[in-house]
Structures are given as C-alpha cells and as structure tokens.
Image (cartoon, rainbow over all chains, first blue to last red; front, side, top):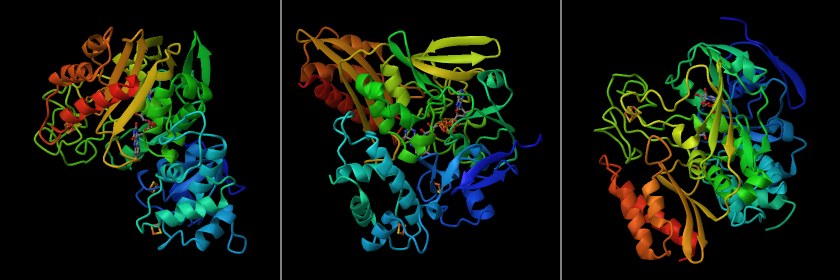
Length: 171
Length: 320
Ligand SMILES: Cc1cc2nc3c(=O)[nH]c(=O)nc-3n(C[C@H](O)[C@H](O)[C@H](O)COP(=O)(O)OP(=O)(O)OC[C@H]3O[C@@H](n4cnc5c(N)ncnc54)[C@H](O)[C@@H]3O)c2cc1C
Ligand code: SF4
Ligand code: FES
Ligand code: FES
C-alpha cells in the first residue's frame, strides 16, 4: 500500500497529526488515540448522533468520517466546550433540567445543540419551517433540529427545556 | 472494514480518470464499507478539489459537487427561487449528515434495500448473478415502478426527486473530457444489470448540478415516512404547479421511494396541463400515475399511498 498522506488538524485547540491506518474513523481516533472518551459510539452508522462533534463550526457524525480526512480542520468535542470545574451554560442547563438519565447520549446532544443554536442564529430553515425565509425558534423547530440525536432514556422534553434555557431569543 | 489505500486529490484533474473510488462526505460510502458491502481498494478524497460553492449561470444556479447539502438548503437564492429543492434536502437524513453530505455523493447514494446491505443474502446489485432475495422476501420499502426480474430496489434519496421535477442537469468530467446530461437520465432502471445505479462510467466525476432559471409556481415536497423525522421516504412527491387564467399552466412532477430512480411520468403532467384544477382532475391524474404501478407484496400499500399523496399535493399546490 502506498503511504497515507498525514492529516494535520486541531482538536480542542491542540494540534494533532494522523498518518496511520486510513480505516480509523474520527470517532475511534478521538477515543482510542487521544483518550477523549466524551464522544460516544452508539451505532457507528450515522443513525444515533452519540458521536456528534463540531468540525469547522458544523456538527457532524464522527463515526462516518475518517481521521485522515480531517486535514486542516478544527475539531471541538464535548471536552472542548467545558470542563469539570468550568461547565458551559448549556452543560449547566442540562443538569438543571435533568436533560439526561444514563448520560450516554449527552455529549452528542450537547455538541449537537450548541452547533444547532448557531445554525438557528444564522437563520437556517428546517423541515418544519412554515416560511423558509424567516424562521422562528419554536419548540417544534428545536425538536426537528435535534432529531439526529436519539435518546434511549427518552429525556427529550428535558433536553429541549435545557436548550431553550440558553437560547438567546425565546420562541 | 477491509484495507484500502488513501490519497487526497487537490484538483478535479487528479480525480478525472483516476482508478480509485471517490470519497466526498463519506456518509454513505463509509457506512457501506463498514458493512463490507463496498470494498474499494483505493480511496481518493475529493474534499479539497474546490467545487463547494453555488455560482450563478445562464439565469440559473450551479451547485458544486462538493457543496454540502446543509449549505445548499440554507442558501438564500435556493430558499427564495427553488424552495422545492430546499424542502427536499431538509426532509432528508439528519442535520449532522446534511452538514457532510454533498451534491455529488447524495446523487450516488446507494439503495437501502436490507438484503443489499446484509452480506450472506442473495443480491444481484451487490453480487451480480446471485439472485434477489427481496422479490419473495421483505420488500416493504421496494419499488412499484420500473422493476426487473433481477432487482426491485429503490433509489432512496430526496434531493434528486426535487432535481428531477426541476429538470436540472448533471455535469460530469472523465479522462476524455466533460459531458452534461439531464438529471432525469442520470439514474438507471435496474434491467439486467442492477449493479449499476446510474450512467457514470469508471473514472468519471460529477463536478456540478445545474438548475434552470427559476420557474416560480407553487412548489411542494411531501415525504411520507414511518416517523416524523430522520427516516427514508416510503413515497415522496415533488411538484411545481402554476395556474394562469384559472388553468394549470405548469405541472412538473417527480416521485421518490417508488423506483430505482426519481420517477417521472410525462403523461400525468400532460393530463393536468391546460385543465381547470378540481378534485376530479386530481383523482384522474393520480389514477393515471398508479395504473402502471405493480406491488411486490409487502409494498402493495405504496400504490394507494402514492395516489393519495399526489392528490393531496395537487390540492395544496392549487388551493382547490
Ligand atoms: C442514517 C442515515 C439516514 C439517511 N436518511 C436520508 C434521507 O432521509 N434522505 C436522503 O436523501 N438521504 C438520506 N441519507 C443518505 C445521505 O443523504 C447520503 O449518505 C449522502 O447524501 C451521501 O453523500 P456523501 O457526500 O456523504 O457521499 P459519499 O458517501 O462520500 O459517497 C457516496 C457515493 O458517491 C460517490 N461520489 C461522491 N461524490 C462524487 C462525485 N463528485 N462524482 C462521482 N461520484 C461521487 C462515491 O464514490 C460513493 O460511491 C441518510 C444516511 C444515513 C446514514
Ligand atoms: S432488490 Fe436489488 S438490491 Fe435488493 S436484494 Fe434484490 S437485487 Fe439486491
Ligand atoms: S455512533 Fe455515530 S451516529 Fe451513532
Ligand atoms: S440519557 Fe440515556 S440515552 Fe439519552
């Protein structure tokens, strides 16, 4: 096999390099090589959102992209959003609203929600927007926009309440 | 996942004619490589070739092959002038997937037939000549139009259904130059070679999709699925309807989840053109559409579902 061109990118601000087996997903790289265990593997097939991270400002499923494909990217995982002694407002809101039970889906929910709030601020429409050109942040909108993150414990209504708490504009 | 070599293309010229499997967003290809349904030995990453923008051309818009689905649906021009396309994209997959999925990769996504995605079953698409376990098996998701004795799978995507109604074109580059083909002719029917989903030849790369100048009218994309979000279509209807002096002056229709390609039936459009919109007319058009449909057993329900969906969409688009 010809050598793999290395990928140089940043994870939570720290420069990293990867040029190993190209089969390694970004998800496995974060967990197995960087010991960033916040990002979870649920399905490994893009169906559950537990592996959601933020790449260049956009939320993606880290299970369906390769570590070698991240050349030049800036990646933020849940560890980059807040720390044990300095939780982000969204993390605090998840605690205040009981936005989880087992907690397995939670890092993905939090990464997804923080990028989702930015998408809303940019005025991105969704499947449930009545008017594609002017979007209102209703609860129905929040639920649709979080539909890529499943929660087997069914904490959905408290997750929406937590997100609502940190949104700049009330719906 | 099987071993493969990986390289990065920095320009379209590196990819055109390359003897390698192209990877864009990776959301379909990597999924299938994990299942060992796809077994490429060489991957060529095309995320650095550019082509990730929307440009204005000849009154229409050119969508780069590497444009992310999310960026396409969020573009002001697409939202204003091609709401059908924005709606179809937003009805598909999840926000995370749409942030990665590209114009080219979305068109080339493979069927969701459960046998195709599961090794150890007979599937002519995955393993030509092995048979088709779906024909007498679990075929609730399968096609009602254009099937063959070799394969009854559907093309599962949403975006391409809107592009078919819009009569978009696909620009392709290979080692011997470029060509442009109508999107309606991009996907194939299975015939006796279901291993080929579309007309791309080895070494060809999609560079863009071009939308014709805006057509106006009422644009509706209705997707019927098993849950309210994040599920593939059982059936979908894309419609652009315009009315002049009380009569239908434009009726561009395409249907998803029902065939190996976005389904387009000019006879149904003809039956609507020039007529005064009415429930009787809509029922006549829908009957004409499903007259050619054939169920496979578990998917028989799709025939009345498609009929009712078209009637509902025509009512919504005409306000009748
Ligand atoms: C859980 C889940 C749910 C989904 N739900 C939906 C849904 O409801 N509706 C829907 O429409 N889709 C849905 N999808 C599919 C998704 O839209 C596709 O995976 C995505 O659009 C593929 O784009 P990509 O860029 O990631 O393609 P890739 O995975 O990178 O590539 C797919 C194929 O296209 C080829 N290719 C890519 N770019 C080019 C090019 N420029 N020229 C030639 N060939 C190229 C690749 O070689 C490969 O064969 C879903 C996917 C998942 C995982
Ligand atoms: S319907 Fe097509 S894809 Fe599905 S098992 Fe049969 S041949 Fe394979
Ligand atoms: S682990 Fe990536 S979506 Fe489930
Ligand atoms: S809190 Fe248990 S899966 Fe969501």
